[in-house]
Every structure is written in C-alpha cells, then in structure tokens.
Image (cartoon, rainbow, N blue to C red; front, side):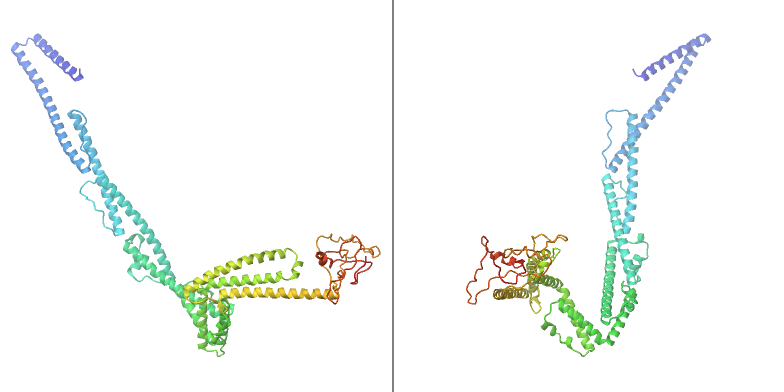
Length: 563
C-alpha cells in the first residue's frame, strides 16, 4: 500500500476521533441535540470547504500542468523543426507532472542550442564580412533569419577557415612583393607617382585590399620595376665594360682608376650618371690618342684570331689591320671587327675550347714522343721516365676520344649553321688527320736517319775498329765502396783471358774490345784463335763487351789478344 493511502486512512481516523471528541464535549456540556446537529453541520461544512478548496487547487495544478505540456510540446516541435532534429518522444507511460518536467527540460535544452547556433552564425557572418572586405569577395550566402543546421554551420566554419588561409597567403605574397617593390624603387631612385603605388608603399599593410586584381597589379608593377632595374643594370654593366676596355686601351694608370672605383658597383641613377660621365671622358681621351687605341685593339684582335684558330688568309682578309692612317673611321672599323670576333668566339666558345684542349694534348703528346726517342732519357733519376711513359700512354688514349667528341659536335654545328668549321684555314678533322700524318712521316724519317747512322757507324767500326768511350753504369754489379777499392795489379792480371770484364773503379778512360776487321774483298772475317776450352763470346754479348775493361798486362791498344 502506498504511503499516501495510509495517510488518507489515518486522516479519516483522525477526523472520526475529532468528531467523537466533539460529541463527548457536547455531552458533558449538555448541548441539546438540535444544537449538536447544527454544530456538526458547521464541522462538516468546514471540512468540506477545506477539501473542496484543496481539490480545486489540485485541479488547477493539473490544468496548469496539462496546459504547460501542450505549450511545451508545441514549442518543442517548432524547435526540433528549426534545429533540424527528430521530434521528442517520451519513452513509456509517465505521469503528467513528469511529462511536463521532461518536456520543459527538453525545451530549455533546445532553446540553448538555438541560441548557441544563432550566436555562432552571427560571429561567422561578422568574420566572413571582414575577410570578404579585405579579399574583395562576395559574402557567404546564408539565411540569417533561420536557425542553421549543424552541417550548415560546419560548412560555414570551413568557408571562413578557407578565407583566413587565403588572406594569410595573399598577405604573405603582398608583403613579399611590397618589399621587392620598395627595394627596386630605392635602386631606381623612383618615387611612387600613382595612387596605387602610394597605397602599396605608404599606406598601412592591413588596409590594403588583397584582391586577386590587386595582387595581379602588384605582380605587374614588380615585373615592370624589375625590368627597368635589369635594363639599368645591363646599361651600367655595359658602361663598366666599356670603361674597363677604354682603360686598357688607353693604359690609364691605377691611381686614376681608383678615383672612380666607387661607381664600379651598383646600378642606381647616380651611379649610371657617373659611369656615363666617365665613358664620355674616356671617349674624348680616346679620340685624342687614336693610334694608341687602335694598336691596343689590334693586340686584342690578334688574341681573338689565335683563340678562333684563324688562318693567315683569314687574318689578312681584314685589311684595316694593316693600315697606318689612324683615323676615326679606322677606329670604327676596328671596333666593329672586335665586336664581331668577340661575339663569334662567345657563340662557339665550347668548340674552340675543345679544339684548344686537343691542341694542348697534341703538343704534350709530341713532347713525350720526342723524349721517348731521346737516348739520354735513360740517365734520368727519380722515376721521371716511368711517369712520362704513363702520361704518354694516357694521351694516346685521350686524343682519339677527344677527336671523336669534337667530330660529333662539329658535325652537329655544321648542320645547324650550314657551313664548314675550319681551324687554321681547313676543316678540323682534315687538320687532325694532317697532324697525325705529319707525325707518322716524322717518325719514319727519324727512324730512317737512325738506321742510316747506325749503318755508317757499324761500317766505320768494322773498318777502323771501335772508338774509346766511357761506358754508362751497368746494373747487376757490386757498387764501389769507399775504403775498399781493389787495387789493380798489372803483373797479376797479365794472364787474364781476352774479353774479361771488370768494372772501372776510378772512372778512367776504357776501350771496347777489338773486333775482327773485314778483308777488303768483303769476305767473311777471319776468326781469331781462342784459348783451348773456351767458347767464343756470343753475338748477343758483343754490345755488352764493348763496355768491358780488358786487361793483358796493360790497357789494350785495340789489337786482339792472344791466348
């Protein structure tokens, strides 16, 4: 049983006791029955009025709750529709009081969500308006009167975040371009003369409209300034090159050059003006020193002729080079020719450098070839001979590779320019072939000369005997040791056999062993007698025996010894 039911029964009991107690009092007092009845009616009326009043109040409460439920349900449905959420559904059966409480709580929650969404929408709209004004973009299309859904708010937030990124990116680009523009203007001594330039340079950065059009205009302005700066730098560099060229031609002293050293860097307007003044001064000086200038140009022309491998005919084709009438017209012809040659060399610089590399390698190769044919190279010390042989072998491999590379590049160049690439008046590959052929013929000539010389020497030796000479140091023999020199005793060595070999100790003059003379008839040489049991020296040892010292009591005088 519920406690309320227990309390209701207790109330009835209490009421019964109260009525009984009243009757007892009335009995003791002696209240007549009719008065007792009246009094009981009054008690009944009071109790009934009290209960009716209480019932009316509770009924009123019930009506208010029902009304509140109805209002809350209507408002809740409206909020759910505005917030784009599912309508509220009470789970299970519940009392009027609990239902009203639940609905009222849900309504308050929905109102809070609506308020928060409206506030966020307002904030996003303000941010969007600010960003769009800076970026010169249209505002985000959203209905301010309705409550945005969560998805709409998310899209709006993403849109605002994108605008912030765009603003940051354009601002960085604007600041970077602005800095470059200011530097260019300072370099050019340029003062902003348009409203846009003044807005860029002078106004606050935050006040500048970062529209795509303004950014494009900024980039265009920067390109124009950079172009002017580049042109100015090119002009200044050209003036400096002209000044250096005139300095060299006029042989201006270093002290005078130092006076204008401050304007030899930079490209500002005042620097350009100072450079132009110096050029004008030097040009005037050049006209006063015409011969000196033309001779300096001719020296430079000769250098370019060498670098471009001009033949004598090509050099003679420029007749003004040999003229002696030093006039302004002659100077202009020389200036035009030096400019043409300079451009010609720069265009074909890689080819000329390749040819120059081949020329240097070829000269080095010829030098090694000359040294290789020199008999005195064997007296070198320190391993130079081995190094030279390695370098010569390396050059023999490098030269063909260089020739193949140059051949391919020259063929490509000739196809592009539809003309032959000449070196010293002839095609390069013909020139290379000619050099190799001349080298081969020179080697053949040297070989024939050596053979003829050897032949003559052999005939002379066979007719008149060998000539005395000091032999070179031979390997394989024990070197001399100071303090332990063997004494030569002519008496003890008198019985030495012919062709005995002894290393000369004191470096005196020695003689080669004599050889049999050919008879005048040209028949075979007569073989001299040898000691019994001894073999005749082989022909292979003959050359070595030429450097041996033969002792037979005294130094041999050129006659064969007997056993």
